[in-house]
Length: 164
Ligand SMILES: [Cu+2]
Image 1 (cartoon, rainbow, N blue to C red):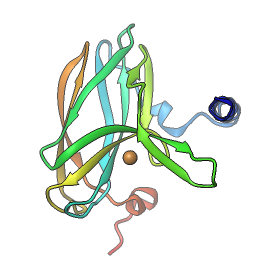
Image 2 (cartoon, protein in one colour):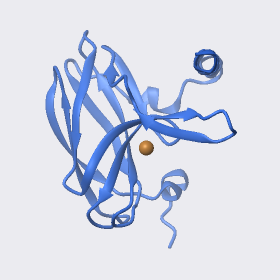
Image 3 (tube, rainbow, N blue to C red):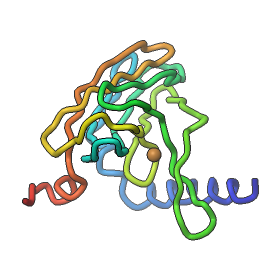
């Protein structure tokens, strides 16, 4: 309880601090849809067959109401979960299934490395840069949406250059 409170405070202070400095780059580019949910900049990390990998995206909820992610699936994975990253308290970060798959109205929730992500487990095939992965999200209000998510290496995303 104490550690989760301090984590929350840390997170809040980080958000406030970051807010005073520069707004996150993506906030300038992301425009909420007039209604419902829109997904921007989805990408998946490469992964090995039988292994795991993560999918990241911005979830834009343009409606006034909080929507809830009730199911996620992908034909390439035997098991798919929404994960959050947390401080294990031993100097390591862990991840676990998020118990709060909520997407507040008129807000953007970003899944990104080191934070919230969609975990694809029991991969049925290897995912390589250049592949596309189908991921289906089911929201309680917005309903079902199927995305075609490009597989990209984190390196090529940060540099904008594909290295071989
Ligand atoms: Cu995970």
